[in-house]
Image (cartoon, rainbow, N blue to C red):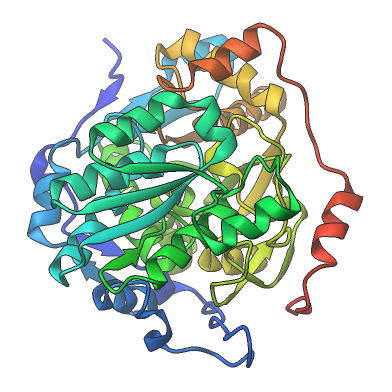
Length: 454
């Protein structure tokens, strides 16, 4: 019988997070103060984050210890399984070998609790009573709600309005774990009121929701802010995924030629790809790492590398990133977790150095891939996860056309059980292809006052 599922024991849960910065040939550029344009230090982040996370944000250490209490909570769902996708291989009639790491077995149904638990833990250690955050499709908000509930902390979630309306059961999941959920933009913050005054019918964006959550945290000494992607410490926490996958690929007697993950801000991609990318950086091993993004929000494939705000209103430091401009509001596609204007600093530098790749897929191509995968493998993927599937299918078809066999590994970052309205719209023909024009991008970037980074 063919071995399809590769599982590890609790003892195989990593006891350290991997920090790729230690191995990068060109280190990421520093964040800048938006007023002086001078590099900022850790103290500038203290109003928003606990010191332990700030230290992780700036550390150059290659390995960071995972606290025992965090590892103990990880055992609720980790290690996650790795599968050989025999059904998908057969459906595609490809010589490629396809594997996927399945993060949908977590309590909230995605990879997000890997960092949510860690962030809640460090906040609790420093006496924080409440955490504010943003969420797109709801996976991050759900994960942080779960984590805050575990540590008996309040959680306040600013959920992008279009996703708030499209995914009511994600909201109910957060409420069940005790979180307060608001449809962003709201009239409860200055940032939200400003957006609503200019755009009363705004569908919201992650950038807007971030502005609201940051404003709320900055105004209350008992409250800190938590981000589900983009920042260095978030990507650090997600590397448990790739470390486990390395062991599981060893069990399979195989090693990937191509590693693929969906891309919103970078945590999903970093979690799987960074531990494997270490082999390329240390040993020169030929590995392609491909970030898969929506063509309606293509910061990696069509954005520019320059300093920009991480939020819409301009409350964060200036970050060196591939961006479409912090005022960019993507189309209201169902993959709400990928509707972010910029890319994380580490991923941006790796892309600039051509150590990783990126590609984009339109809305219909993504759902075609998700449905094909569900029928071949039995798991209904989240729309975000289906971007990675679309890229895996594209690469497997290339193998068929070229008559070569390559090993493909992708991150199936979450299930789509709360995304069935998206599938309903797909089957009823309500989804349309959407790709922004170059004029749209140029108009958004024209509002930035920072030059491109050479």
